[in-house]
Length: 187
Image (cartoon, rainbow, N blue to C red; front, side, top):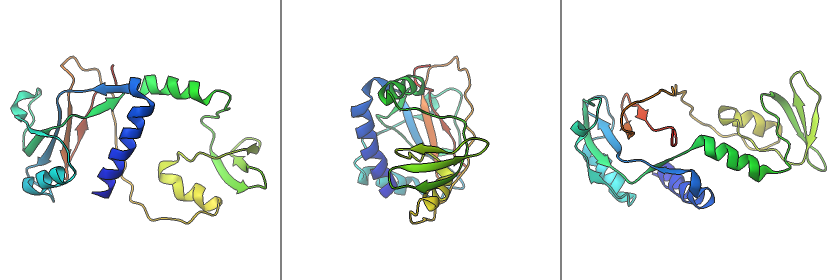
């Protein structure tokens, strides 16, 4: 529940900052797997209600291709973001910030003013700030800088991007052998 509330706060801030990147998708459907789930349909609906999520019951037979072996299907007023548009907006906002891509940082030290980064196969560089977008490597980078290390659970995901000639929809099957299908922004 704490993760869901945190995501909701972050989303509202994102929507205020980048409204032009928000893409409304209908329907956006969540379901519970009929077998193998650790959550009952009743518990899932109670969870959604407890968060104050606005939802309606959804007839899953409306979707194509057919979705089977799910229960407690609900439609929610949720959105996706357009990553291509967001990339351009963030690049413009960075203005004079110099970005280095595809550079593996192998060490970082705090200096009296800023930081010194060691880069594999390259010269060390002095920077004013470090923005850690390392996901699974957050403890590695944080450890170099003296931050307390935290225990995390990571799950790798495969996210194929496919051409689709059907009407767009969003679907997530929760808490079982689950998957999601989402539109890739406006494209």
